[in-house]
Length: 108
Image 1 (spheres, rainbow, N blue to C red):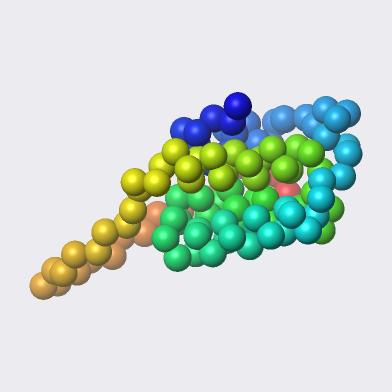
Image 2: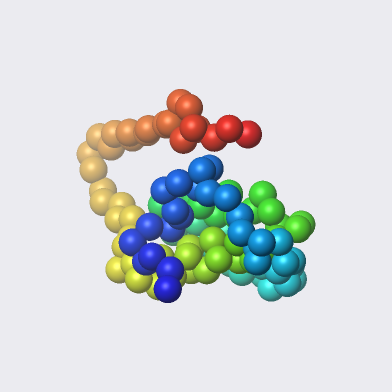
């Protein structure tokens, strides 16, 4: 079963794909699910934005491993339904932003 506590495996750049993963995934289904989670990431769940953008890199040629990664994102969403962003009125609102300057050690 997929880990419902994170939308993506922590060693995403250090994993090697097994021989089974060379089999192509149904790209119509992959793109359909990808479109839905992209919408969710853009409008209500920025916590999955990186995992979804990583999955979007393989939308033209997804394999079994990509399908497993996508299922993990969906499992995470199902197990974290109660997560939400809440906006409250403030007299003088302050916006705080954070960034990862090394792009999470992305080699590409």
